[in-house]
Image 1 (cartoon, rainbow, N blue to C red):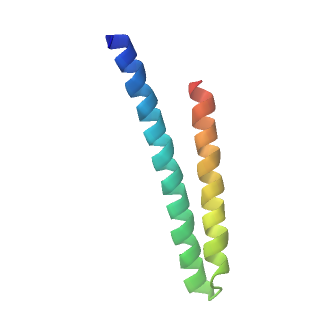
Image 2: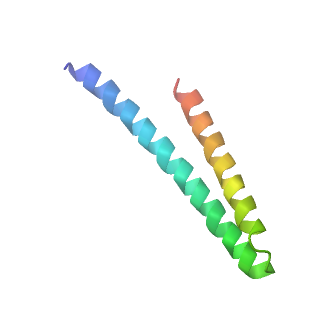
Length: 71
């Protein structure tokens, strides 16, 4: 395998890893933020549901922007 091919492969794997970690992190922040709001307002399970959905949307948006920028 040529050095340039190896470099491109590692760059692609790095981007995939960063996108995945970013999506999981955004969903986790939404989940824990929603649970915090549920405990604070006693609104279980709606804060968790809304927080998780917002986290997933933020993660997908971040992944879209990162992939579009790198293309």
